[in-house]
Length: 174
Image (cartoon, rainbow, N blue to C red; front, top):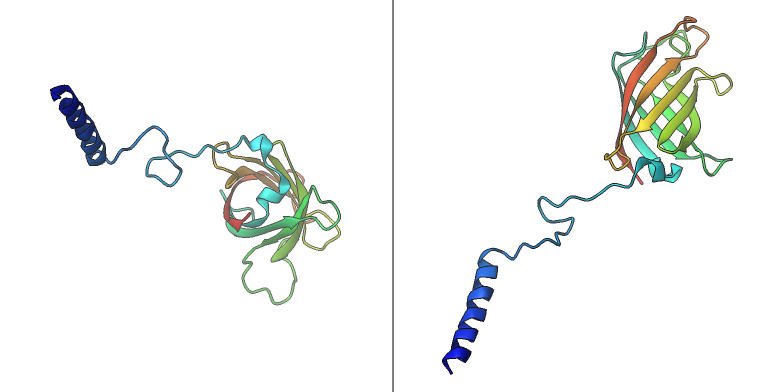
């Protein structure tokens, strides 16, 4: 009988100890503090997963343009595996010209996401390319950060226009 009583006491002791330690185990769920959720490799992201609003930061700012802008990406109307959208920039008061240095406050974008690489063509007039975006998704960012370079391709750009580094950070979306 003492063996049975000792066994019951041991079980009770184990249960109380587990409760006092809050019974944290190895099977942490993503909502628990300190839990790590793995991101898929950037090569697995599809164009639909980058649809949404993005903040752009250029370092340094492109010549004649602001250091910050906003991108809106969505499904391309003609090519379902491509992206389209707009880049919006605060160009300040412009009274005479519709564009600053060949760039509009809102320009069209079209491009692709393949193997984690984003390429976008920018057009301020809907006809000619005025900017080229080349970026790569940051591994481990879960598709929320893209880094790369932007190049001025407008008619007012010098032939040796520099590639300007940028960071895209997701604000909202898929």
